[in-house]
Image (cartoon, rainbow, N blue to C red; front, side):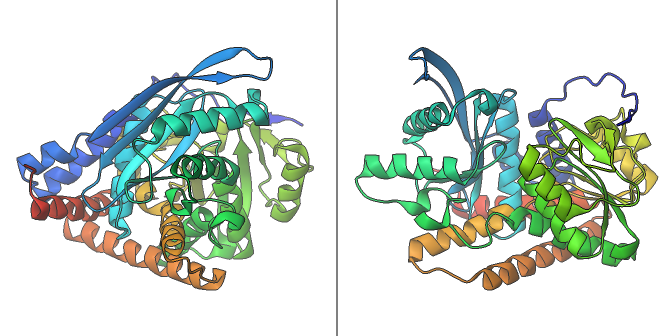
Length: 425
């Protein structure tokens, strides 16, 4: 296959925590937030770093570094995923924990924000080594996590099996099963119907809301998706069913482009069989960077942070950007999109479907009473639509972007809760 390439200027590494703080500062300015509350909410509450040993299959001992950060606990227990990735850093985890606080507040969930990660490449580990790593990291985190304090969930390179190992490790140490200690678990041990597709369903829901307001007919829209993991693939499948034409997708190995539209069901089967989207018949190879600049009505970054920057924002051709990933857009790129009239639905709303159904799972585990999938999906869609409307209303009130509308709503809710509770002692 020939490959579509676009030259991308050298991009300096952008610190995600500084980005998160700058976004918060903008919202705090719009809200004229009390200086004391501003100082509290601008910092993470707790940072946990651990260096721990894992016995490998060849009997060697290898050291790994992991993090768990809690940004805020004012509105309830901390909630946030755990990722396994070679580029995990403390500042990345701090940023993600802050974004989780706003995400939970925006959707009205009774949680604070947290995030965790281990510096590793799961692709180089056997299943046995991955289990050993997960269980040892969990053992180090027992001082933090639990159903009333901090509830992990899947994130980049983690899945329901990893959550099962975490839940089992905590349960073995407590001496009884504690299913509500994590979400995103298999159904057999207290997982929820609808959870695997929840983030993608949320992405589809806000996309439909945005298209309605922009008068974009799904059957006339083309979509490019960077990242074809759980979120990207589910989003593509659901949007394909609604009539959208998916023209480009990519994963860690590269991407594919077909301007006439991809056969999404066949692509999903190809990915299941080969482990990647590359090589799909009838499509042209495209890099992850080039995908962002392809001609498409809608762009969905669903991979990692810092993908849309000052260096490529002017070349993005999409009218609508849906941030399915956390922090894919830098503040400088936000300014470019604003000036160009590009509508952007921020991550703290666009990918909130996962944490919303995680909340449903946590509630079901605590009650030992489980709901049907149709009820879960209906509740999810109602929450996402309500949050979208509230975000839009705040953006209009403050004459600002949808991102700042979402931030104003979320930050105000956390600030109000902090003011009501007061400062201890």
